[in-house]
Length: 148
Length: 151
Image 1 (cartoon, rainbow over the protein chains, first blue to last red):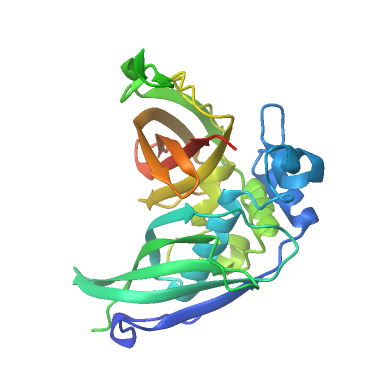
Image 2: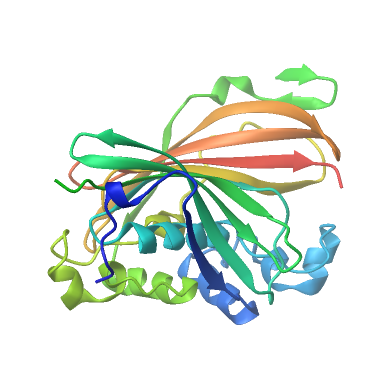
């Protein structure tokens, strides 16, 4: 198990990550398959097919939003440790994210407060592409233990 | 039908929740989801290590609920633009999802609103889905926001 982070070790301004990801077409296909998004009625075309994506006004196939969201969840649960709990995650898919590029998932602590025997940590989270754009960004709340 | 220039939808379905799916969670499904996103946390991927952890066994990672295929619920018959995208998701994680759980999803149209951005007029349709396990505990609430646009 990963190390446990405690409330007294966290301060607003702290950066967490980066969690590095480099999703390619094969990984997107696996995600769609595991997520059962590729079947009849699914929207797999824009995620896997150049021509289908271009018909929708995209420059090429894009990452499914739930995959970007899963990367940010992983950033947060890796950091929160085994006793941590991701309570909420609110993400905006501001721009399409293309495959085949290295992505950095990063969090910034914005606030913390005691909540019972836990510490509630609030963070800004985002995915940064190689051009420094942040196509996915959002906010999260994570409960971690408070050291007694 | 509500009509506001070319924006049309059936407002009577807003807030009306219907069952949109039921799904039994398996260890194999959790592991295949983890493999697909590159998840390595032993809480979600290593049964033996997870037994020694705070949940006493394997649980699903937070994003796993997106792999529970559900229906869309009632159709507000929203007519606008020529394409739709997932604009964002707001998620509350209330309790762990475990192998063997039977999860029932219930969905409602939460709200419909419009905005004008850099690229012109956009209409947002927010669906709220509540995921409940076989013990009657809500495990997650997800708001999915779809944007309708003209491109």
